[in-house]
Length: 417
Image (tube, rainbow, N blue to C red; front, top):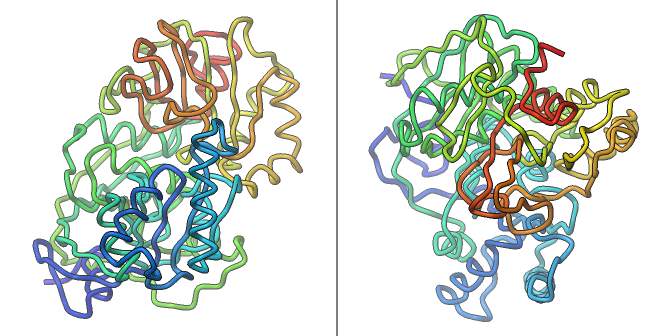
């Protein structure tokens, strides 16, 4: 019997042929920590290896400040000072202050097909859009990785989501993955590799693929993967990187659980409060009054997402009483949007455009909602208190729905404007 791409990557990383259910001690290619998770990971590393120990390979450790950056309190400023000192002492050159969201920085500059990558953040699974095995880990596990460059894994079973049909106008990768999560449930893919495939996925941009893999964790997935192809190679080339290694793919006779999704005729999807798997079509919830619209995050803050929103907002104004917050995912995406006039479009429409960061996504920095307020967001989670008050509500949508909603002040189907 053949192997899945997840089995092949973990086989390469552990130096032996492995199958789903096996336990392996594998070599890590890259490790990511950020301003929220790094302090605990460093504490664990020092407890494991000693206070004066050196990380296993400073070139393979990436540290990003994105959740509370620039520092929004004295406490976060002191925290970031400590992290900068640690990076300098360890010789960690790959650390970035306000250059963007860690996950976007990783795919733009570091991750390549076939890698085994870990990050102290659950949405690390996004990097699988480049054909890597990427997964979030806890701070203690990250301490082990920083000390040894290795970590144990149980090789996951794989679900292949075969997506076919034709996407309607204003329906994107975000809608596909929301529909899948709605179908399988928040625990439907627990500890499984979610492999997105089929004719529709082959035609998707890297931006859409990143969005889908980003949200694999929302159905319990260990990782999300799109097998690498010409779209992957083109993206890497656009990032200034030439990949000449082997493009690993699953064997056709590999052991998969298979699930199909027909997307023809599917309308834009919405995850309604307070669960990501509570998914309905836009027609079920249009007209809900909103207070804030957030376009951004590691899920939908790329240039392609901003362009979709800007094309709808051009020449329009944000509805009275509605706050529209736009945050590009990285400095690179911000510059692309700036050069193409998208930022000007947002500002002229009445939006607040912020520097590349997580922003209101995790509810720990700026752009929070008050009790009783409704946020329509292109991010990945709508849990209680995720963007501020636990008495607020969050609806997850694609960038077109977000832009249309900002204009009218109520949840709006972009196909009807």
